[in-house]
Length: 159
Image 1: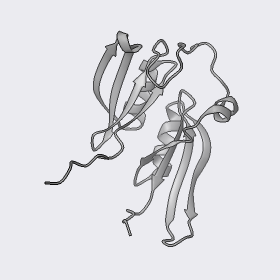
Image 2: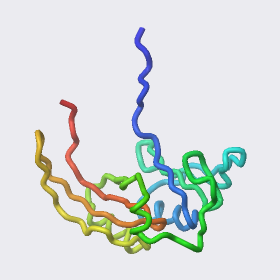
Image 3: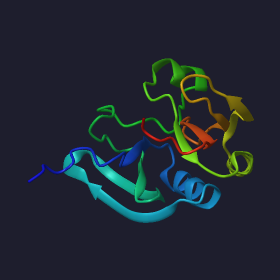
């Protein structure tokens, strides 16, 4: 009898938001995520949380500014004071998260049209290494300062 797999893959990315409703609209209307569920758990510091499906049951979890979820600050965030992109980048350990797409330029533009700020316009990048790849990538700052990458890449096989 074999033991069950311990790692079943990346499940979700969690974001604290300055405006949870605007952020949910951005991810659903501009980027094509699907609303899954809204919940709260006051005993865990969660006033309001929304799950959005990124596809294949992978989720973005949005917390409102008044929540203090595990792993986040014990203080609520001040929706009136948003750190600059530079301030956020100087302290963030999550560099970015990526959304796979067949058309990074189109998704990049949809994000900009919905209020995101450009970080790096879509471009083709050639990688080196054991398996060189051609990538198409673009980056934006989302509504809360989160960095979102739009990427088209070949399927990578384990060697």
